[in-house]
Length: 236
Image 1 (cartoon, rainbow, N blue to C red):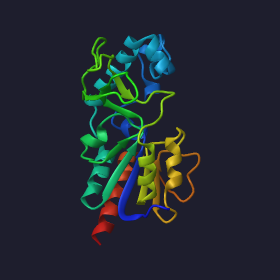
Image 2: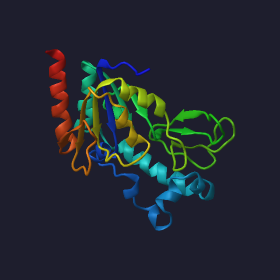
Image 3: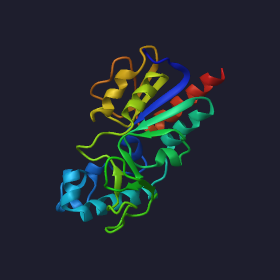
C-alpha cells in the first residue's frame, strides 16, 4: 500500500556541499594522512583492522574540525522551517551542523562523528562523545576497542527504510549539497511523490531528476530564499 503524503511535511536530503559552505571539506579532500594511506584505507573495515591508530587519527581530526565549524545560513534556514512544518532531514553528512542549527529530526545515513561505538556485533553500544577524540585502548563496556560510529565502505547505510518512508510521505522534497552520485542515498529521490513539490539546489548539476525544479546557486544564498517562500505560503 502506498504511504499517504502529509501536506505539512518537508523532507530535506542533504550532502557534503552544505557542510562545505561552513568550511568543512569532504573526506576525499582531507590532507595529512594521504601521504601514507589512501582514503579507502582510512574508511574501511579492512583499513581499521590493519592500522586502527591511523583511522582514529583521521577521524579525530575530522571531528575536531567539525566542532570548530559553525552552522551556516542554509542550516539555519532549514531549521527555521520547523516553525510551520514537520521537517525531516535525511543526510549523508556525519557532522552535527544541522542539529546545532536547531533541527530536531535528523536521520543520518552514514553515521555520526558525535558518537563512538564498540566493535562487537551485531548491535554494539554507542557513546556520545561530541568533539572529543577516541584513543587506542579506549574500550566499550564489552571490552572491544571504540571506533567512530561511521558507515565505512562495505558496511550498510543506516536507517534507509526509514528514509524511504519519509521521502514518500513528504509534500515537499528539497535536495541540497549532493550531486546524487553516491548510492544508495541517491536513489531516495525516486520515492518522492509525483505531486510533491521537488526542488534541487546546487552550483552545478549534470542531470536533474525528473520532476525536480533546479535552483542553481550556493546553498547559503538559495535555501534561505526558498525557506522564506515556504514559510510565507504556510501563513497564507
